[in-house]
Image (tube, rainbow, N blue to C red; front, side, top):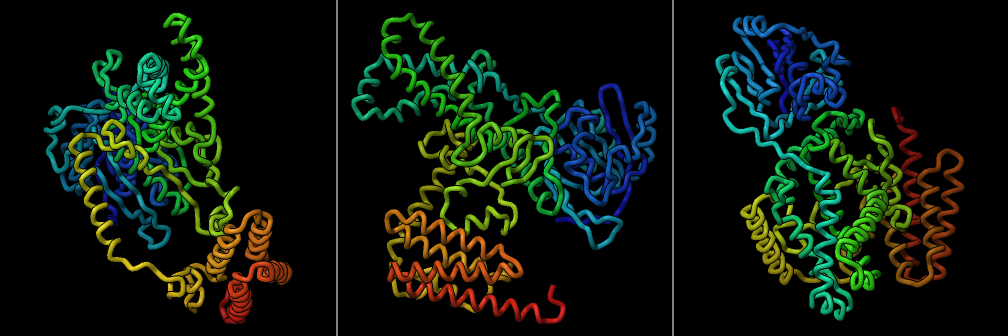
Length: 542
């Protein structure tokens, strides 16, 4: 993390027929404007519309406060020729050039922005220039007249083909061909296990060149910008954790529809294809008579209508207990992280915490209450690698994929070798249970009230109860009592504490294996209460 001294430079913005110049732009504003290019804007107007995502206390609140004025190119070049430090953003060629005494920044950088050189109110600013933007640092003004050094290789994603009828028709045609083959009867006899057939259809869709993609195959459209997109999104997450608002990138830019994918959309697209293929098998099984009697085009049309309708239902539904696939995709395309209960400016809807409603874990419930800060979720993409197929991998090239596969193999072999030398933990050994950690007098950092330690103890009691059948009500009562206790204040604390201890005593009477655990937890509750009273009596306690 770099912390720069305030300096000034000449900053120029070039478009095809217009130019803007700030003849004396402070360093903090210069870096913030450069950070705007992280969003891959195609014009100065688009860049400025992203100002709220990068604005920090060291710069003006609105971009209208920046000292840019429109000039003709001759005037701009004259000023640049006499500037000691200068930066040029050239939108038509997607280049950034700087020279004179301007300090090199790099395509990926992080800076600590200090308002008015104070040591308080600092914030972080992240720059992640897209791979297809060219950065030339420490050059002369003659470089402005030169062409790019490398071609502008920006991925263009045709989502109408990837998500639309082109995909659904392809799946319909391939699935009907499978149904007419002996492989279908074989899979049907094997308890209707169509996984291998699903993998083949999915792989063939991704790896078959298409005329409507100019000879490219669909897989190529998924890659080329994952790292950049994910880095921009992560920068927004860190910005939010410092107290900034979570603001989605604009969706009204002309290039939004074909903008490159990030990792989260790529993962969702994998599941989108798998769901479409699963629906194709469902349709085939339910329409065997039509398949046998109707003409081929009618069957294709009927299946595509079915797939189109039901895949939309899937897009709007919850994905593995969390946000809907459409919500995940939109957040990834607009480069914002998904935080539980976090409002995103520019996007309707709020993500809810996964599995919390049906989860018996008291620690998860504390997370849902926000006691550990905002919980951000993301899909790591491990399921894309489970079929051992390059086609589905998040690695862009075969060489990268084979290298990653070798790393997995070496790790697995090393892990198995180490595992064989590890002696199993006996039940009566220290650290054989999380319970023994409660005996330590050292508090968990940030757990002043001791609630996190209690949560671990409650979780282990619940684990014992889950070993018995039909104990849902007892688990629910314990969780509710613990929740009321940790949320209670003032006079309610004594009452909620009494209720919790009463439930623990009741459980100990019914389950002998919980006698010691119940007694320990009750003692810890009492000790925590006494410690808190002692803290309140200390001078300066807030």
